[in-house]
Length: 226
Image 1 (tube, rainbow, N blue to C red):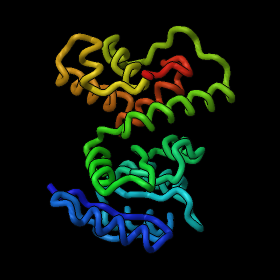
Image 2: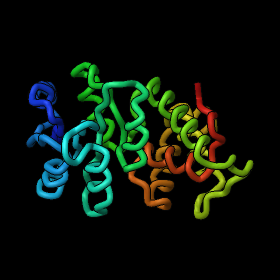
Image 3: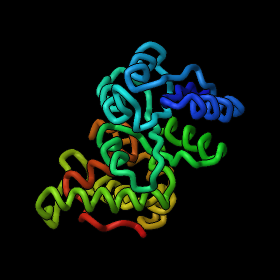
């Protein structure tokens, strides 16, 4: 099935370059582009794309606010892949809280961009493990500076003990394969647990599950799978 993509960026060269790179993929189609966040929201509502590749810094409605408006609409299946120039851009943290499914550096290769679109479309974010772990560390630092230390033991209502274990490991940056190895179960079992976690907590994907785990204090701040 073809992944339908919208490119949202205020720079024409970026929109054109990314469109060419993605359209060259047999399973990806760029259906349109947007010059700012306001147009991205309108395109999401009108065309219901699978993925929007969203720049953060845009005039008018920026990428963070556009992401928040799009993900707030429960009837929209669209996933947001945020673009950033810096590895620890402070705005990326806010974009994930707004509902973005993952992020990618603007200097990524065409292959990395295409794979990131596929990953986000499949709901398998987090993205690049190296950058993700840095981001989780930053997320922890920012959370720590604005709230008290969480309790040592936190229960998540509705989740089983095993689902809580899986969620904790997801928030630490573990992949499904790594979680399966850690818990000594089949990888398909972990996928089943993840589906159940997302359904019970009404979350969009693994990225939002990780954010949830930190915000509820399930994972001790600063603890990552490094």
